[in-house]
Length: 153
Ligand SMILES: [Zn+2]
Image 1 (cartoon, rainbow, N blue to C red):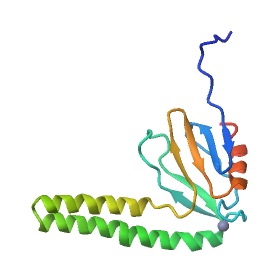
Image 2: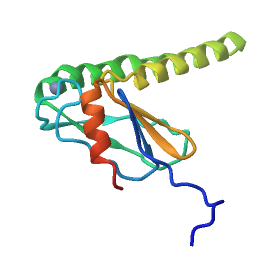
Image 3: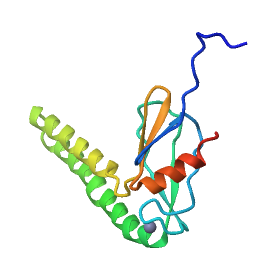
Image 4: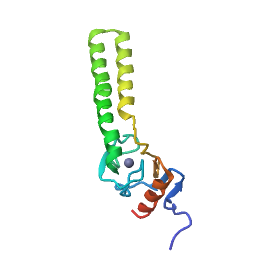
């Protein structure tokens, strides 16, 4: 028998482009492109923010060929050139200016590189709160399909 004080299991919810589902280790993606809703053959990897617990490390989601070609090379280039370039600049600055200004510039450049590398051009993202994962998608149609695909764990 259930006691009335038992915590209720977290419900899944769909709200326009937002999908809230209970925390889990695997999610299912509909096999269509979240950006243009065409059939998806390629996969893009999503960077996972570390805060909120090590529940999911890497997530790949399906995208169509065209969106992949539009996004992936530019995204990679941006990450390498600007993201890691800024890290290299930060290290160079810290090694050259061994004073307070050097330390301040170091952290400014590191933070800037982080922002560039975390920049997400797909419109697909998620964050976690205490009980759930909250996913954001570029379209409500895709959000609904994702919601349906993940109603069961
Ligand atoms: Zn597409």
